[in-house]
Length: 80
Image 1 (cartoon, rainbow, N blue to C red):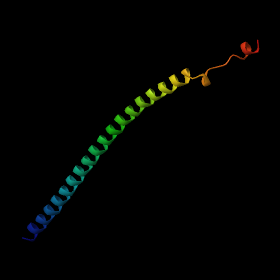
Image 2: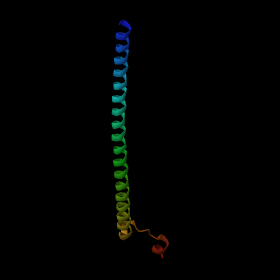
Image 3: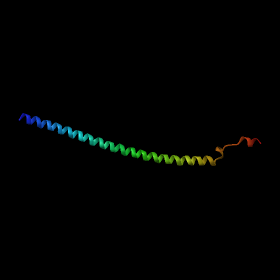
C-alpha cells in the first residue's frame, strides 16, 4: 500500500511538472507570436517611412533646383 501511495504521489508530481512545462511553452509561443507581429509592424512602418523620405527628398531637391539661391554661379562669366 505504501508503494502505491508513493507511486501516486510521483505521478501527481510528474503530471504537475508536465502541466507547468506545457503552460510555459504555450506562454513562450504567445510571446514569440507577439514579437513576430511586432517585427512585421515595424518592418511595414520602416518601409512606409523610407517611401515618405524619398518623396520628401525629391520634393526638397525640386525646390532647390527651382530656387536661384541654390543655383551654382559661374564666377568667370560675371567678371567679364
